[in-house]
Length: 149
Image (cartoon, rainbow, N blue to C red):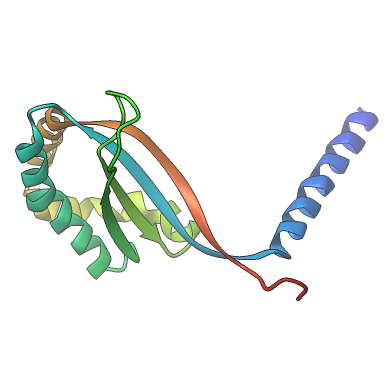
């Protein structure tokens, strides 16, 4: 048991020293949740209409209420294969705390937009017919520090 404690302690120190060394090279920035979506063939107009009528107003409301710093939409100009993504969305959060509390604070904004939970659920079901989530991941932006400082 004593060896296990020493091993875990040494491992923890290695993790801390790795993190500390990384901080010498950059300054932490905002967190982004990135979503890649493949538009269902033949559903482009419906996909873009839903994005304008539902997603954009929600994301704008999140930003106005300070739940996110900003949001972005982007398209992929090339396709690697037929299952590749077409449209990307990203929500930018100030830090991990803002990201961690987002889900708990966003429901009232969503219900205000859709009116009822049932309407929200129906819109989500329709949305799934127009596109497929290909990937969802988190990234943290960093600013490199000047060399030698």
